[in-house]
Image (cartoon, rainbow over all chains, first blue to last red; front, side, top):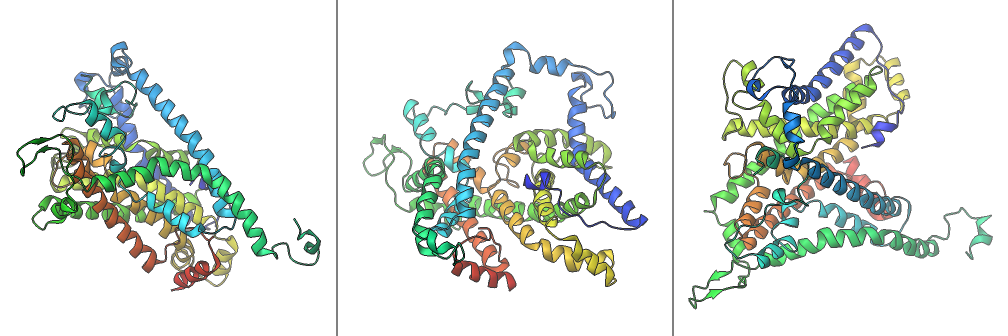
Length: 175
Length: 326
């Protein structure tokens, strides 16, 4: 995926004015498709709570109220950001170490059971992610042993160390 | 290495079998961390889930009348309950999962390929284009769910542009469209980047030759670009399909849990686990796993998706090449 970003490679050039026009139109559509919802999110972030449903393309007046609320001391958003950062850094480093060495072995070396190993790797990504973390140990068992059966499991999005910046529901409803 | 004397006369890859054992040991060494990680975070939980599927809920034992604090062994009973014809939730969610996955992947393929073609032609503003393509893909699905929930809310911007008001994020067909659209927005860039990587491996001479032969732009697209980019495209589609069939967070955040029209099998599994029915949750998860495995199998068999890359043992490589030709 990232190879697509760095390798320029030979590109076919389309000649003629009409082709160029189509390309520009495509570029415009592409940027609009990708960024229009983002733009709306950014604009909405700068609106006051009272005119949050306004549909003007530029917020009037521009307000930083939402940001003040999010970064208020009691909100714990900074802690969530830290959690996100720690998780992202740790998984990236671990993934890089593991995947680069394994990738080298799979791409450059010949060994027995290579195909079987690759099939195994691919099939691990067919297993539903929810079943890897929730219904089974360690998290499932732990919450079952440490709480009564009828007690609800603690929601990870409400706990200090497992809440990440993407746990938006928590930000929406702090309590 | 004892073969060094013969290297001068023989090609360097000649002592194949002896080299293989040495390579095998080195391969084992550098594969070990990956194996350990996969075992710890995926294989063990997978096995634990499979074991869990054989156990029922702890609670009142109907045979003895006593409260049983440990989960009773029920064998394949959970699967029987999941796959029962009158378990409407399973069959409905299987349909939901399939419709959502195939609709999004189809849309993503069309839009993603178009995006890749545009990106391949773009000579100006390449940085802007790349950043804008990466942003939807880089945003966490939960966050894009919140964002689309906002854009599509009852008083949101989409409803104020449209002539009619639609409750996109409640339930029913509009919710299905909302999830399909949000997921397409998020994942089409992924496909675009993979297809772009495939496009950039097509040598420019091929196009020049076609132009000399008088092929127009449309003809070049149909007869050169698409066939040559097909291997990359098929693999990209397959990997997207793997993810889309396990879709969870986007419908969960955008629409919510237990909504008839967008509940996927991942969501029902999570819902059962939330209700402490771990055995049923595990059974749903395994049913989904088998379903995904079948779809991937069909894909690899009939579309010749080369998901394992072009490396592999000699026999299978030849086998796959035949598949690719067919």
